[in-house]
Length: 266
Image 1: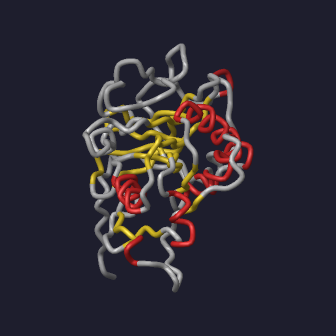
Image 2: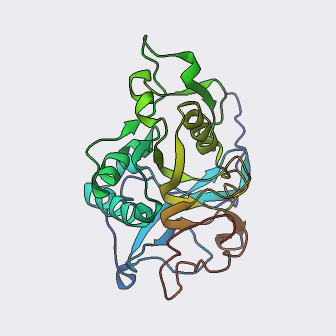
Image 3: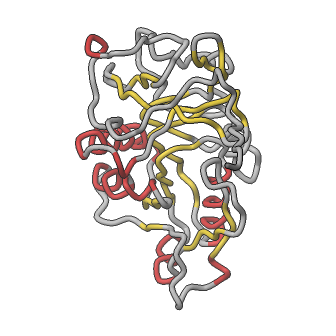
């Protein structure tokens, strides 16, 4: 028999299967895990109405000392997806957008609901699948924390690109973490002649995206989210946020909802 090598440290905390996650939003009195670290298998993300969505923890590729809380939007219950989209629409309303763009893949689970919540009758989807009539000038490379391999392209249908020219656009995605995917979307929007009114996501994960999401003059692009979730490091007994929460953004056990808008200077 050939011996196999398991690169995971023997004392590394295990992660749950995600089958039963993202299916309900609960009050603090119904939580089955602590509000404060160390977290063992799940993270209680606090929503604007004071309730919680429990997220499963997942390891960071190639770094056994780090983990993140995961949201897979198209595996969430319809009630959870509806609720998150409602929070996203309310928080993005102040941006004054004239069009909504949804990013693949999981941002497309929220974009139509956010667009409807803001009173729009349609939205523009970006995609990774190239149709034969697409124009390579309307395509940009993209990579992300969860899909690090290079070679993937982000496209917009040229039949829809013209509708973005000169318009204030709201960009919708499921999450922002490193900001790499969003930077690609911003480049594609610039090729379409659009002005970015703001970005809205279900989950702002960590802080690394803040330095990347700026306009051509270096000013922060407005970002709103339904909830915040920290990147975490391994500690005795589980996982804890790798850095303190930024000023003005409470952790999950705090007594008020997260800030309505997140931006690099918040």
